[in-house]
Length: 474
Image (spheres, rainbow, N blue to C red):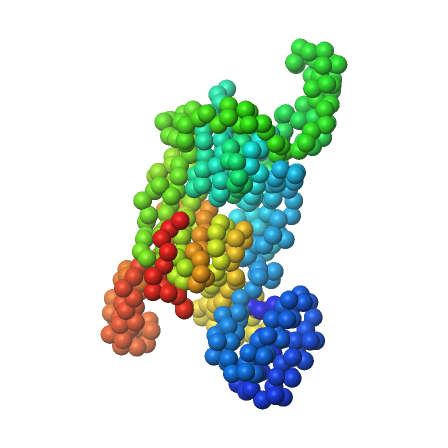
């Protein structure tokens, strides 16, 4: 079980007094709180409060709380979880920002299989304009919040269409793109998965419109005689065009400018070949799985042809309060997921961390044992966190008991991928012959079948401590 070193004394303090309420235990608990390092003052106060609760007889409630926190990390030492601090670079103005996650392989060599993919999040304030630019990367966009208008220029044509929450859009490398946030109050938030086409694992924004800085126009890199000849324009006029200071990549737009650029159809028509729409809304698809504990939607090349050449699909899971998704695993796809709403936690079985732990301990037994050992990877989840679920790794996501947990997943190597359920109706174990169950588990087949056939639900279930019914999809 993975625990940060600085959390251990805190949990130890709670466990010490959990099975005794003598005054000496209370004093010992508070002493432990006082000497803890690397925690905020409010955390120390909570530590004191828990000591008091335990001393005054509220043991059961706190024991449950201890269990709920045991092993849950904030992602700092978890190679599969990314927090705010792992967004290492970006562009920021008064009107918004673009944050780029560090390379996956820099976080851990275990993520080398997706090192050529990058993840970014754009946030634009209401009534703002994102300056036209292009990237040396193919990109798939997901609108996590808000509504806007996206314009794409490619093959001599411009396509503009209105976008909103749940829309999925592909943007080919080299396409000039710009957008507006057309809402009066709500931020526009877009998650982007990028696949660089020039330098593996690296991509850049290239700005045509701009000045001498913030952003700098790529035109300004050329000599004046080249620009004079290419644009057939005098040098003084070029200096005026490209020499102006700018306000940044994301700038405020007037009401009239927003109104004019917002007059487009929802979704638009893809003008670069074929009759597909420029975007597709994942919430408007028929759910692949749905019950009172959650809904699961998918967009792939069957309902959005633009994804055909990228081998990428997207999933959206809405886990109702107190519910859980899984355990499941993906046969081929590695999932790069971001929490778009709510809180909860996830668990995953990982053989790689277990083998690394064995090597660090110099375990010869681990090297010679037949079959795998598994490390439980467990982390809290909250809005904005990114997690990676490698192919074949069984995992579970659990929503908190007071709000839905919503996760969008970008699936790499999605073609011919299968989502394999490990519990509930139609789980993979229920498909095995009775003899296989008996030989595999070493118990009578009837007993094994009773266990794997006792859950009547499918895919989504009531979670640990969850309520009997959940809230409908947002």
